Length: 84
Image (tube, rainbow, N blue to C red; front, side):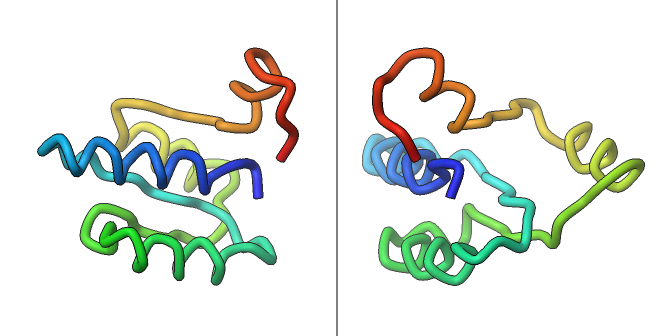
């Protein structure tokens, strides 16, 4: 899952504080539907979009359209003993 669920939960906390950043999740993994359900249950459907897996130029364009790139998996590997 690459711990996208943690990013969604962080967005939920931010939303409770009046902040509504947007998130784009790119990929087509087996957890996609579960992440969509979590997004809906947290009331984040208007903030989160799901895109198909991108590579090459499409990936570059997607990344360039955002101010922040996050890889929860890499952050957790560096700062936590939790595994995804």
